[in-house]
Length: 149
Image: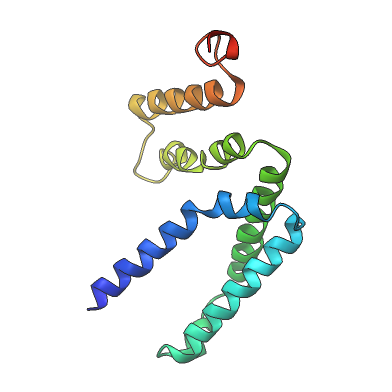
């Protein structure tokens, strides 16, 4: 039962993530900072209620250092603020594509972890991915231009 519940929660998170750009474009009238604050107020409230009524309570949060809290909150809030701003200022498809290149950076930077190394396939894959993103965002010579439509 616990495994099914975790799977459903994970599936719900993926669905919400999939609709993030669509919902952001739909809320384009709301300033990015306000939208970020509203989203994190709702999510934070749900998280606090979950912790309060979910078993161990707030004692689980006492062992986390303040620097970890600050880095996590500022990082996640800042990322979404700039994501919301980008979706307001640029075409949504292109802004979303660039924003979701971060997994590619994880692959590239993982080569610098202890005991790991950057292999040729990592670099080739990164070049293909960046080239594809450049083609979509910047356009290609003939196939993506409107001349042959």
